[in-house]
Amino acid sequence: MSGSRGPLDKDTTLPVLRDSTVAIPEAPAGVDVAMWQQLWSSSVSRAWDVAVDGIVVERYLDTFRRWTAAKEQLERLNSPITMGSQGQPVLHPITRYIDSLESRLAQLEKELGLTPMARARLGLTIGTAQLTAEQINRMARE
Image 1: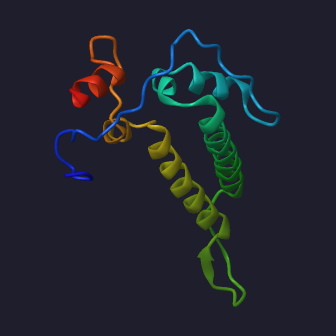
Image 2 (image 1 turned 90 degrees about the vertical axis):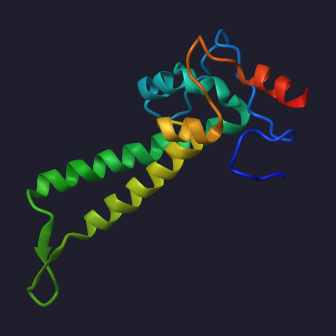
């Protein structure tokens, strides 16, 4: 029964983890190099394919950069309230922008497995005492 939310079905294949000795890919221009290296040196990054998932990591970091800049701008305003066109107090438009960026970050965090629940949903177990995805895949095929 493919697609159930129960235990692994025989046709379920978990991602095979990348060798941890593989070098961290070079950071693209415009990306925070320290954050790029931190993400790619994390245990969860072993489940990412450099050629395919690199763009998702880049998108995550770009969104994170824009979110940080917007939060800093909001802090400089000293208040999320501004005056509307009729002189009424309204929520500053940047708050909606921050909300949209936070939603995008949450989505990307799920896709990349950056939260405990996301890792569980993706079938990733971080830690040396656990079975590898390759071992689980082999067991599921048998």
